[in-house]
Length: 281
Image 1 (cartoon, rainbow, N blue to C red):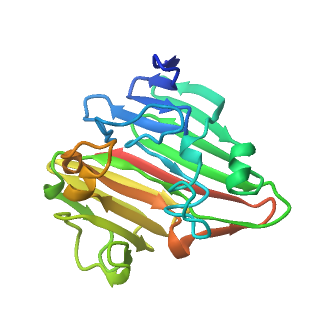
Image 2: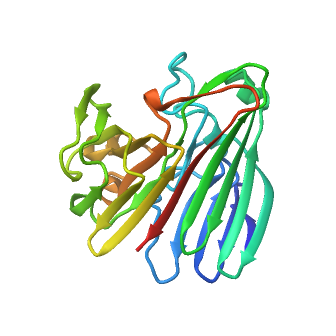
């Protein structure tokens, strides 16, 4: 079942329910903010203080970072992670493929607001498959007459029972950039998080495993040579108005991305696809 709904303030979203799973997608930002497989806990974390308001990004779920990830390198005063996550996307396709799989496609094209920040023509679509596994693919086409550079991310917030017991596998031996001290390192062993972490890992394994007690989450990536691992920890959480002070304990971000030197240059008519497939085992 696909149902279009809105909050009292007019904030619009799509609610999906099928035999295997349920989900909710905000039209602002094409933002998947809830996904749950039947008889399993919610896969995605959502802040208890998240905004559901026009022009404000949602803290949690899977924000879409486009056309830049992090700060704009030419103009740091522009919005963090680009404009896609606060723009209204159009629903261009929705289909119940069978009783266990639901398909949604959303689209973002240029408008006066985007052109004021990034003067290029583009066609961006987001394809979402909701079922026993979650598949989400961001496709960017350059419809301009000149090339442009993009850095993107599927900024996925995973829900965990306790961050200090989480184990992340698939990054041993990989180079990473630590944004906290702006230095490069090599990962030794699996990842445990017991302090603030903000890292970009390069050339990760195609499959990343997140272990949370008896739960294992498998993340498969396509079109990405970088993975961001992020947890704000105690002090930074206190500085965020849309995050509770203890919110960091129940989340970790594993972000399928094209960050830093993994940015992509698209010539006219080129299309680039960034994809993540997630499943709880």
